[in-house]
Amino acid sequence: MPLSLLIDILVAGLLVATIGYAISLNRRLSLLRQDRDELERLAAEFAGATARADEGVRQLRRTADDLGNRMDERIQKAEGLRDDLVFLIERGDTVADRLESTVRAARKDLPAGDVADDRAADPVRSEAELELLKALQSVK
Image: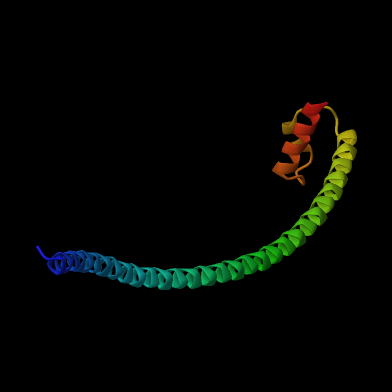
């Protein structure tokens, strides 16, 4: 066999191997292009999700600020109500002290007896006053 034929066969074999390798490389490049397109799509989705998350954070901050303002208003109202209640309690204590003084003075004036007798003796007093006097006498 002549040498040129052997060289031609060797070159043909190498060409077949090169063509096979080129086909394999072309497939890999196609997959890489598809993966690149997929990566670009994922990057675009990620950018959209990031933008939505940023907007959500801004809305949460606005909501937190609104709630803080509302809470401040409610705290101010509650403090006003507390002050009103303190005032009413103080007035109630004063009225209770005066009532107690009045009851003690009335107790000194009353003879020790039954409340039914008190009703007959003093028709001006109401039923509630007489019941209060009876309760106070039982505390003795």
